[in-house]
Image (cartoon, rainbow, N blue to C red):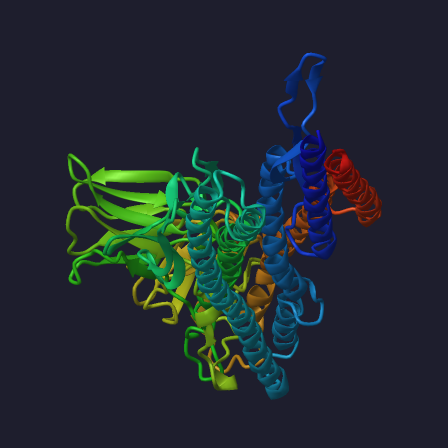
Length: 635
């Protein structure tokens, strides 16, 4: 009997001691990140059968386990990875938003000042100060394009750096998780299957850290190991084995890093759209949806402005009485050969219509059966194609293939370098073509009341005979017909006269209104000495308010405003959704803490409870000893 009481007391003493140790462990790790509260699981020993019934034999501690909810943890991992994605995306887009929205350092003030200077030249075309101010403001505008593009390029370099850093962290975490999988299996085996709670907490904490970097699928195996998959099912951790990711140069753009999956001696690029969560997914999403589009959109403004201004400037005349030259350097499309292409293969891309340009990138491929040339707009995968090796046009660009092999492709970025490569070509104020290259006059001896317009120069290309003298002479006697004389005109006779109708020769157009008399003469000639002429300057200034972009629906300023508005709206949307996701993450963590977190008040109460249990069990042992001594004394 004494032995039975002793064993029961000892079992209670050991259980109380285990509970005290577990409680002390909980209290010590109350502030340890990722720690889950533990509890000793007790069961009653098998009762002893007697004639009086079953008599209890004390208590047994079967194991110590975590108080843990797999459902809540899995839910929190998904919330965590999306919260990290939104946070990283918002952090990066905020940089662009701050830059573009700054009224003092954005592009809008420089555009306004440039066209204001063009208006000043139109007001005072002969003033050297006005011309010099135009060149200065043109240089300032170009510098602003350059600085914006440089800032965006710096952000792009920062993205590359972050991709490398995050991939290194992911690989390190994967290795640690694999090692813990191994240690957990060994520990469980050595302990007869009891869970190594602290190791499990450490592994969960590492998985949580990985979910902050990339979206993961976690699959628990029957032996307690965790397998981790990313992307479209690529294994990163399988038991104790780990695979690695690698920051690799994009096959289609050597200036960008992307994510590679290392298998043996090969590295395979993971499609960016498969990296959907975590900080890594957020920065890659930002680059794909905001950075590329913003840089190309601003480049599109630079290209359109440069080309439109050049086209009009070349229709004017400078102070040297020569036709205007290009005012700006017009950037050309960027063409990138895919990594696997033959070095001798090539395509060329030219811009035909700046008003039709988009901010999208394009891909030119040659392949398929039958062999077909295809040009694809990557923003929506719309494409045009033709059999064989053929030039293709789309959205204001024409891509012409040179030597090319089946299966090869090229990335075409029509506007990505627009803001980077725009430059001012004019260096001398005398080269500013503010005047029109022609002037008209009616003969002094004309007897009729007909008048001739100042004349306009037809769009490019410029006619080589533009500045040759042309005379229009009405027949004598007057019969509503006139003769034309001049180099390049063909000298037609008896041309029908309609008041106000266009009369076009040698690349110019004039109108004669009124009633001419017999023998009246009208002359169109070179505008020699037209230093005070501002007709072309007025046309240059008028470009500011014309809708020259988006197929004639947006001006330069409104296009820039659309960029600012789009980035601003996206930034605000990300800010709101990021905060909402952060709140959801906080709630998820609080739910986990409510179950797994250490409550110091509760643990303090448990200490008293288990202390009393320990003392009571000790008393049982003492009584057992007394009873045994009493039995021994009976003789």
